[in-house]
Figure 1 (spheres, one colour):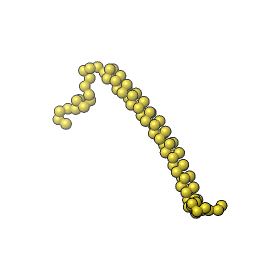
Figure 2 (cartoon, rainbow, N blue to C red):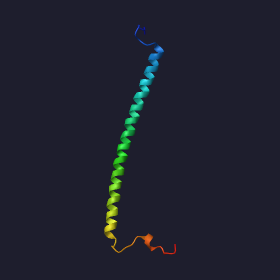
Figure 3 (cartoon, rainbow, N blue to C red):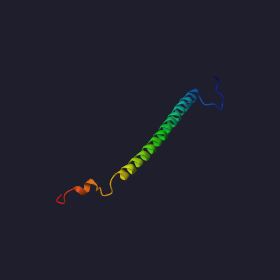
Figure 4 (cartoon, helix red, strand yellow):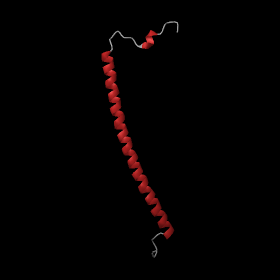
Length: 77
């Protein structure tokens, strides 16, 4: 390959190709990780909603006069 006056030397072109390949892999990895984070956030949102519903059902199922266990500690503690 003949180098023109405006073309980079062969070593620089090889290094540029290497950097471009690494950048392409990094961009793909970032996209994959981003999709993983999006999926995990959706799972967390779903679990938080389920936990809220369970807490609400538990509160509805408990008699109103039920005291939290912390209030059962004798006064001398």
